[in-house]
Image 1 (cartoon, rainbow, N blue to C red):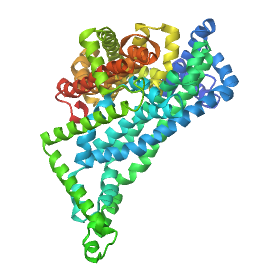
Image 2: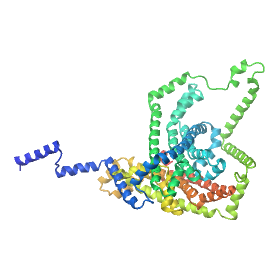
Image 3: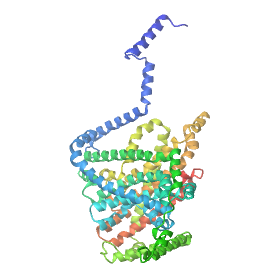
Length: 594
């Protein structure tokens, strides 16, 4: 039946009214616009933040000594930001900036040397791998005895936390260069310095910047943790003091400032990485980088051993006495290089270096007090005593391992569930993304004081801190696994009427295993670090608590025993995670499975 003129006119009037003043909307149009607005990702994120702030205000208004509230946070920001937070943040920034600069200036050359010089790699690799996997907080009592309380201690802690990430990533990047690029430079008789600046460094920049970003987060953790443990200045001390006095409004002001600083620093580092690496990714720049190689000077040689120097030197000039020493050093270097090419030769060199270090350690222990630096023999005696005589190490060892296994399992289960759910449900990802991004950027050590307030000391506190520290690598890798999946596969499953559970189990889960395995491997190491951090800072249990107890009593030889066990467990965790990861997903690409 054709519509009447009256209905057509009424509809036209409604449309005209809608277009002109927008005061009247038909029900279907109103619901459709509202639905489209609600589905907008940014609207969902903003609404999520608003709802959380309202809930926080309602809960915090009735529990000011447990959670504070947004209004109290706002007032604390106005009252104490300039007088308390800003000076403390400046002190931490001075410590962190100095340590972070040392990490980059020293870490990049060491990583390049390990990648390009076999002798350096043979000597340093065992110690770099060990220290890279070691929870550095276990060395804090030793640093405290060595440096005392002051700026040097804080900088040393920052460097120890961050430098090995730079070294390892630089080493991996410089070792992964296409041999054809280096062969081309050698054909054009490029000097070592020219090969370094035009081939090795440009090809390693992405790895170097990845190490710098990791070092930023780890170094910030080191700076905050050392201020929590042994300092009367900085944001770490401010956090501890505010939590102890139950001034949680000021506590969360510091947390927000640190989070904003970490997010901005991450944005700046990524922008810097793009601006630095982009020119080397363009074919035109690559051509300009390789063309001048043909015109460079001859390979670098020391003047004392060049033909020109030997033919023109006459009389007792300065070059003649130095020539035998230079030739001797050159011959020794070539001989050492030939030696480490053999596996048993490398082992021999490493054993000799270890014996030299032990001898230097023993010599140093004779010049200072045994309360500061015990001899290696005293440490070995303490290990034997606590392991085989009294067995006192096994109780704390069991406590630490129980906390590790429990916290790691909870973090993995929650991380996998939340990550896969955020990947499959876009609305859930939009709701949780602001909090995941903020919490992931924070140094998680800032939560230690407030976790003590909420959970007290003991196993519950350690479990909470381990879960907070380890859940994000698993969650983010699980989320990334769903995002990288081709949409055709789930669509194909749905076309065969597969349920969401069947699609997840048969398609999404197998695709996600390589990514989740990588996240689990990271979470395993992070969990162990969190266990030791929680025990050293806020507990008398476990290996970390044993280190603190012996350090307070100046029983340094006994203090080294839990450090030795922590080191062994760290190396075992690193080897297990590296070797088992490819076996869990043999179909995965090598970059993900390893």
